[in-house]
Each structure stands twice: as C-alpha cells, then as structure tokens.
Length: 256
Image 1 (cartoon, rainbow, N blue to C red):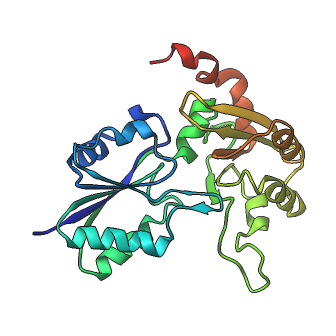
Image 2 (image 1 turned 45 degrees about the vertical axis):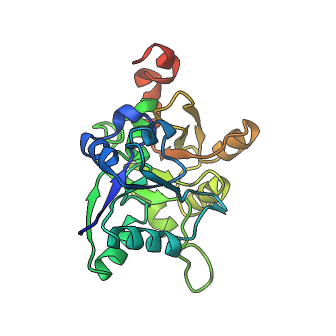
C-alpha cells in the first residue's frame, strides 16, 4: 500500500482563506500533523478517526524537534497512510517544508506540496497596505526576523546593509521579539529613521491588531502596548496608504 504526504499551507488564519485543494486533502487525511498557528477550526475538517498530531512550535516552546517531525512524516507515509502536514501560511515561506520534502524524497516516499496564502502577503492586505504601488515602488523584499543562520562571528546572516538600501517594500515574519534589534540594525545600516513601519498581529482573524510608527519609534510603541507575536512587519511608504485603504479591523464584526 502506497502512502502520500501532502505538505500543505493552512493560510494566514481565516479558514475562508484555505485553498480548496488543502480542504480536500484534510478531509481525506488518515494522519494530520499540524503546527501551532493553524486555526483550530481548520482541524475540524478532518474525518472521524483521523490521527491528530500536534507538532507546534512557538518561540522557545517546541512540542517536537524538527528531526522528530521528519521521522513522524516518514513513518506514517511509509505505513501507507494519507498524511497531511499542515503549516500556517505557505509551507515554503519560512515553513521548513523544503527540509521535510527532502527527507521524504530521501526515503523514496511520495509527496506533494500545496501552496497556501502567507501572512506575509495577507497580513498587509487586511491592514490596508498594498505591498506594491506605483507611487512607492515596484519591488518587494521578504525576510525572516528570526534568522537562525549565523556567520563566523555569531551574528545574523542577514545582510542588513542590503535590506536597508533596497528600494520598495520590506516585509518580515517572526520578528516581534527581535523588533528593536531589527530596526536599530536597519537604521545603522543606512535606512532613514523616519521610514514608516506597521506591525499586524493575528492577521485575517478577529484578533487582528495593527500598530504603526517609524523605524526609530516602533519598538517603543510595541513594548508599551504589550504587542506580542505572531505578527508580520511592513516597512516602507506604502504603510501610509492605511489612512485611505484600511477596511478590516474597524469593520471586522460586520464582515462575513
């Protein structure tokens, strides 16, 4: 009996933003291996008898190590099961699905990768921020605010000088706990201190909240308002479009 593993994006939070293919795979799954940021409502789409395995990671709290997650996927797929590995957002945007797919491939097991809507894209949209705009540039840069890779000195492998001087919009994920460090490094690397920035927490859900400031002020604003993860950060003049384009937070209770 041949098994298969679907490495699947669950979207940014709102279950209505789950893709039709992801929904279909979840309903067929024998085993559902899910992350912490997956909306619990999406888990209810699984059939009766589906084995549910929580492998969520939040900050320093990891339910299971990555190598153990890989082994879970291999074992259940090898056993002939339909396995859905459900990840928040898109599985290949800071989701480590590439590593999991490589592990499955190494064992000669069948897999598919199902894209999902990343919070890096949906968060700004739901805050009223267009990531590209004719008045503000046509370039978009996405980076991780929680960069694990280090250089020889133990510093982040991110090229802050390049990030600071790149035109257009910058978006980062997993950066709330490092927000002060990120903004200070951008400024010291050449970014203007008064560059607009917004942070969007729990994007697309009824818990969504957006705060705004500049690179020099946003860390203080976030700390004073007890702003916590998960959140997506948006840097650039497009942030000012919120004044005209905000649509979700003020009207969330009336939206369907």
